[in-house]
Image (cartoon, rainbow, N blue to C red):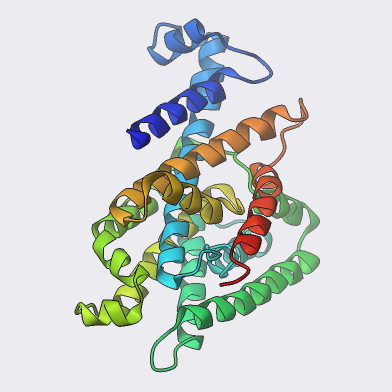
Length: 324
């Protein structure tokens, strides 16, 4: 019932994202545009179908990918403060994207998802490699991830210092997390990377439940812990890389969505993963509405809004887990 209610809320916010803007559209106009009753040249149809619809769908997909990636990271690390942004996976993807946009500006855009995924994958591999000592513990993974994340951020800053000013400006807007350049072809790349990874993670729900109980319990139930943990981190990298390629760095969604989903839908990952996807989608599309309407006609990057909302939530988590 709670999942059904959450999906209804998501549909309502999705409709609001289509209707609200500099040119408001009535509910009747929204239905006529989406049902194909308006001519192709009608301004309302152009605004909804060609401009707002791909942006809203992209916001939902990016939020869902980040929510699932965050749930996986928190389960694998067994740490409530873990998410792909904090442990550095997103930073690896962003560094690769910064390199492409600033230094290799002529590269076809279709290569961007591949390279951001490669950046996320390389970062995940390095985190796992440097944290390995007869196995990889969650504490070592997080500490190594924090260090590598700082190095990747420094690398991105160095590239921006020596890059062409126009390319750097484009990259900085993208890194702030923006949905302004949402298009159907970018959505195809996101779904191509994200759906298989999310499906595999959902099929591995029982393995995630075992990992959450502790390494000894998981090994005692016959789980090949390091292999499963490595494969799940790979799926997390695929989801994070796809989301970063589509919308840049959208902070704190991967951290907050699993916590809210856990409170609403419980701890079993068969319900938690789809719940985190719905909550993540709600957070990003809601933040994008605020980003578009906070200071019209300017459109703020959605990553700015999620950072403003997520930083206090991160502080609350630190306070709530101060004795852990």
